[in-house]
Amino acid sequence: MTCSRCGKNEAAVFYKQLTGNKIREYHLCLDCARAAEGAAVDAASPLYSLLSMMVDQGLHQAPAADPPPCPRCGLRYEEFQQGGLLGCTDCYQTFAPQLSAVLKKYHGSTKHAGRAPARAPQSAEELRRRLAEAVHKEDFEEAARLRDLLRKL
Amino acid sequence: MLLHNMLSSKMGWASPTGPRHEVVLSSRVRLARNLSRHPFPARAGKKVLAAVLSEAFSAAARCPSLKEGARIELDEADDVDRLFLVERHLISNLLASQPVQRGVAVGERDVLSLMVNEEDHLRLQAIDSGLALKEVLTQALKLDNELGASLDLAFHPEWGFLAACPTNTGTGMRASCLVHLIGLSLTGQINSTLEELSRHGVITRGLYGEGTKVMGDFYQISNAVALGPTEEELIAGVTTAVSRLVDAESIARRELSTGSRKTHLEDLVYRSLAVLFSARLISYEEAMQHLSRVRMGLSLGWAMPADLNAVNELVVLAQPAHIQMLAGKALEPQDRDFLRATLLRRKLRRDGMEALG
Image (cartoon, rainbow over all chains, first blue to last red; front, side, top):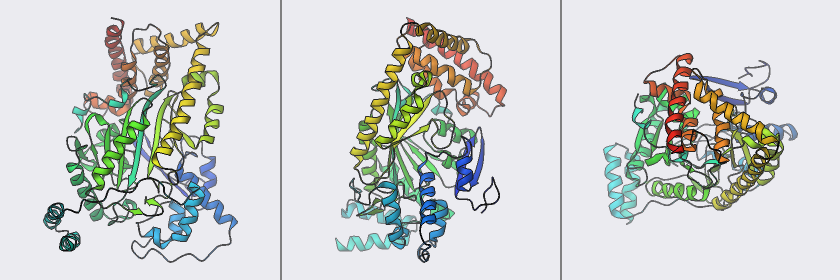
């Protein structure tokens, strides 16, 4: 997609803004994003700094062969570089070396020190309730997973 | 209009009761969470989004923190409803602009809420009055625990909670304070003060977050990174930065209200009060400018026929969708400006007279 402002460069910043009741969509190249006055793109936004960081990185590095797309959701690394969003949790495995560098550069760290999720209570009662729910919703994949967990108990 | 009854319900975060509320209006903690089993919303089809919404809402129905509140599917709401939720800081512009298979669950007093299928599957939010990030974090983590007990959340042992955008990966947390910096903008110190803050690992934005214009001298201060420090360390960083701002703002307000400058400030504040009491047509932007000045006068303890509670509420209520919600229908801008001016006059007069006893 080309930049909606200059019509020349490839768009790198995708952006929606609500003005009154109207939603306007912006897709801008980084030069225009930087030049756009005030409202269009906020240079303080995390997505903006991520994207410009990746563009800068791309300019200073020899182009490496793109990794193959994510086997689960089909996302190509190039799409991530353009939009700043990953497709699924498996993308984190597929693009692990690249993302490790991105995380390091953006956060200054790759070691999470905060909390971990509260895991599901694995009581038989809880599992049975969730199994019944899954069956009711015809989510058989989830039902099979819960049945296996129940058997282990 | 689904949400008309929410108009009369209290917004906990708008009441001027929290610590240092003369400068800090509210503290907010947002946690990004995803379900391991589904692709992220931007990459998910309608069926997957529907499955996520139903899993999230049934989990919310079991959470003690959200059980009593409302669960709203956004494609069942109309434009005014959606904008209303944005103005109440309960959903984002992104969610309002793509309502299909998106939703929000809201707890009592609007303190806790859960956005479904925004950039991430789940965005948990806790918000309350004043500089109270620690307390707000406790609330958010309580909801996180409740949800984590019945949902399989995406987590990487090294990188933490996995988010659709790597800028949120790690704690998934953005902690922010909404601050009122009118003193610093009147003394011209605002830019240098905000620039200095970047050394403390925080970023600054206007009232509506990304990309919208700053209105009425209200700014949001939040943590810049999400991975590396613990939640508590990140909160401590933002709290330190905001405390410095509060100090700088208080000094600026004192300077402006002593000696020869006092008359100038009084002139500014009382003129704004006169506009709010007299205008027959007023835009949101203009209303915010005058409310901002009156808010400063009140926080300096000046006797005025208005009170801080009413002013804080009006900052929220004077927004376009709230005005339309009051009217019960979508309005042309001129009708909106008329209704807003009427609301300002009535509310300031009524609450103000009570405040003066």
